[in-house]
Structures are given as structure tokens and as C-alpha cells.
Amino acid sequence: MPFQRFVETGRIAYIADGPYKGKLCAIVDVINQTRALVDGPETGVPRCGIRLNQLHLTKFRIRFPYTGSTRVVRKAWKDSNLDAKWKESVWAKKLEAKKIRANMNDFDRFRLNNARRTRSKITTNAFLILKKQAKKAKKTEVKSKDKKPEAKKVSAKKAEKKK
View: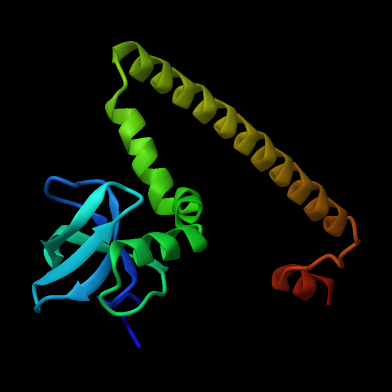
């Protein structure tokens, strides 16, 4: 199947728009084709309906009964240790890095730029040294092959003169 994440009861979603932007919630029920009932007891999202185009579905899913109460959702959330799993995900780390970059001042951006330049110089120099070593190793290999004596080729005119 091409799709892995479905709008289903227990699916954890990241709210991308609206008053609860940036928070996680669990889908409790599907209202219609464009809306879902969500609840985020551990993240501060109250039980409410939200448009599906405001949600980004994550790979996480918790198990609880269809239209479970907030208490049931909270228990399932804690039992699955979802907050720790989310913090370890690549998605959460990218969001955190984006937030840090947005809060940088001019001096921080200057320091970051210098650090990138320095890192680039170090990697370029290391690459060039390795390239030079590989080229030198290839030359010595070719020279060792060339040391074998080869029969001299006599031109056709010289061969005729000798006759």
C-alpha cells in the first residue's frame, strides 16, 4: 500500500495551523471527511473539532476505544510514553532546530557562518590530501607495471632495409 498514515482513532497528529499550532494531539473520532475530533490531554489541546488540513499525521498511534474520554486518552498517552518518543523523532528535532534558528541574533548568525566556513575549509583540505595520496599511489602503481621490458617495435621501413 502506498499510504502508511491514516486518519484513524488513536493516530497522533501535529497541529500545523490554528490556535494550538505546534502541539500534538490524538484523533479521537472522525466527524466527517474534512474534520476530526481531537484531544491532547498532555499537550494542552482541549477536546475539539479541527479541520484535517490543519493536521499533519505522525507515525505514532496509541490504542484506546472509539470515542474514548479524555481520561482514557491521557492514560493511553502516558502508557505509550509518547512524549519521549516524539522528542527522539527526527521531525521534533528539526522543529527544535528551526525554532533555535529563528531566535538567533546577528552575532549568533555571524558565529554560525564562521563555523561553517571553518568546517568547509577543514573538509576541503582533508579531501584534497586524500586525492593527492590516491593520485600518487596510482602513479607508483603504473610505474611498477611499466618496468617490465617490452620488445622493441621495429618500423616496417627499417625491417625492409635489413633484408
